[in-house]
Amino acid sequence: MLETTGIPDKEQIAAVLPGEARKKEGSVAIIECYQEIPCNPCADACLRGAITVDPIHERPKLDAEKCNGCGICLTHCPGLAIVVTDYQYSETEALLKLPYEFSPLPQEGELLAGCNREGEPIVDVKVLRAQRSANKTHVLWLAVPKEQVDEVRFVRRKEAKA
Image (cartoon, rainbow, N blue to C red; front, top):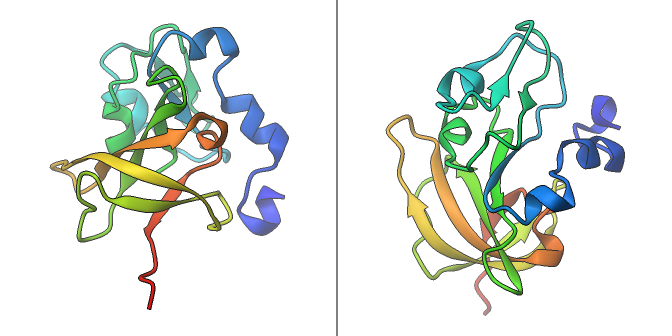
């Protein structure tokens, strides 16, 4: 499916999500880089050595036990293929840190439409923080219902009602 639509299938997605035990330990990066291309800024940016790309054309590998979910890799990925999720944020919501390169940045407290990988709105998400980055890949901190956090990969402003 990825080769024809650009959208990963359920098996590809499941292969990069953290296991249930890791989800209980706090923030962790999720690398949705599905193609083998020569690229390693995420590995170079990770201060904990949690990401490796060896050889250079292989897909990045995450050692989830070394990852603390800081998100530095997220801002260095030119493909916007990394998110950070904290499944323990609250009883009903997870914290999703999402790369964002549009202007203007959403505001704290703003409700956005959380969209799936196909670009379809699936759930309302709340902006907790809009973190600016020097390299123009900003980070949105979003409160997302736990049931949809592994599906939300983009946001858009909600349409104004007439």
